Image (cartoon, rainbow, N blue to C red; front, side, top):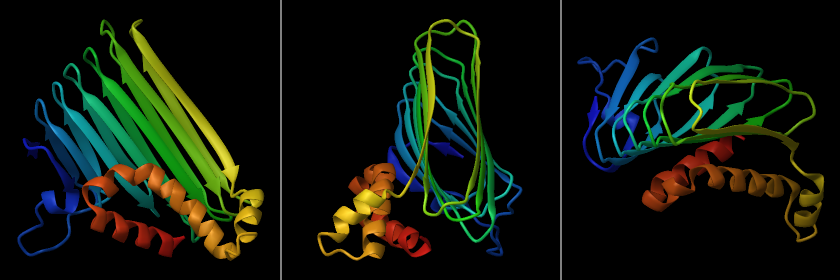
Length: 237
C-alpha cells in the first residue's frame, strides 16, 4: 500500500477486505509505504502486524490503542533522509489478559527523527510485556530519537515488563529513553472530591487527561472520531 496524499487515515478504511467480506487474517502483515514529502496521520483500528516505510522529507504520526493482544509486531523503517516519525500508543491491560508486543524501529538515513510516547493503564493483577528495539545505522548524521513510557496503575498489584534496546552504530546521534510509574494520585482525587466531584468521576477525569495527551492531534483533525474514541476507552476503563 502506497500513501501519496496528505490525510488522516484509519487503517480499516485503507486496507481492502477479502472479496467475501471476511476480516483480514491476524497473521497477515500490512505493508505501508509513505511517499516523499507527505504529512500523514494514521489510526490503527485493525491491530494487525505492520511494516511501514517512511520516505524522504515525510512526517508520519501513528496512533494506536492496544488491549488483550499477544505476539503483536510492528516495524518502522526510516530509510530516507529528513523523515519524522511520531508514535502515540495507549495500552489497556485488564480482565487477567496479557498484552505482549514487539516494536522495531530502524533509522538508516540522515536528519531522521523519532518521538515515541506510550501510556499504559493497568488494572489489578494484569500484565503488559513490551519490547522496543531501535537500530541506528552507521555513518549517518543528525539522528534524534526518544522514547517515553508512562505506566498508570489503578490498583495495587500489577506487572509491567519493558525492555528498550538501543543498537546505535553512529556517533552523530541523540537517543534517550525514560520510564515513569505512578498510581492514580489520592491527593488529586481528594482535591476533586472537595469540589463536589464523585470519586469515580474524579478518576475518569484524570484518565481522560492522559488520553487527551496521547490523542489531542486527532481531536484537532476529526473531533467526532476523537469523541467516539474517548467514549469507548472510558467505557472500558
